[in-house]
Length: 421
Image (cartoon, rainbow, N blue to C red; front, side):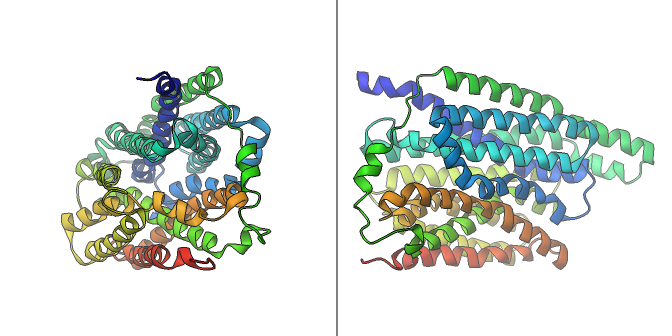
């Protein structure tokens, strides 16, 4: 190993750990939805999917403000600040569990999402600058693997802690008197107290570790100067229609990605599949996503272009959606899980297509794309509302079909709108 590679190995381990944290706190939501629906006695799917709304809406709120915060703090201190904000949100789960207060749980999720938006905005640039530019794609892939492995572990751990006896508990609650029911629900809610105390402590320790680490600061002045003349005649991001079409593609993409992972456990329960089995369904979705990610590492760009991979993913997503609605039972669940495979290579393809040709406006445009992650807040909530109104969680998945068709449009023609190609 060369001295140069040794120089960025430790920072890569630190950033990899942060991406692991991203995955853990993001994908545990799939388990929290059915757990909180029982613990807080929620009456509708719409209420339950406020979990994803509270978490992902923070990206819409903090996407652009995060860049201003980072201008004041710098990237290294910004990452530490993001971790501390997340720690505050995690700590709120403790009184929320003690009181079984759903609104307090949602407040904690929003604060975690706020810290995560800041942390993501700060840490993503490091993946590119740590090491040779020609191996940046490889480093991005490694970060993605860290994210999805964490998501799989989060669901397994929290599924065991929170939902291990959910079937028996749900049946028992129906015949309990008020006092016994209250005691049982209090015990259920208390199960997350120790895990979130641990998460809070880990986040604080990581914040201190980042401050004390040797992570370099990013100096963007040179790149900004070199980009000043790269977009002659352009005065704002509003002169790049392909950017806004790309932001919409990201919006609907994050929406279907979150739906595939976070609704599948509740969908399994709707199909009368025992919770002892259904609690692993989110991990199946993420596992398929991980397979797609690893496949992309070995096939792009040697065998497939990133654009072609995105088109294949969008087409397969549309097909799997139709099959999920038209089939039944475990087969339908399998097609929802397979959407993880379809979703795997869309994110890394949309970003470069949306930002291509932005030059000095790239940083501002990136803030807009971060805001588009709020699709994970809006679309699952619409799915929950449709599920309630139709009294059919399966038919509500039709909402995914136009999303995949739009992603296909963007990857075929949308990214060329307003550009000279």
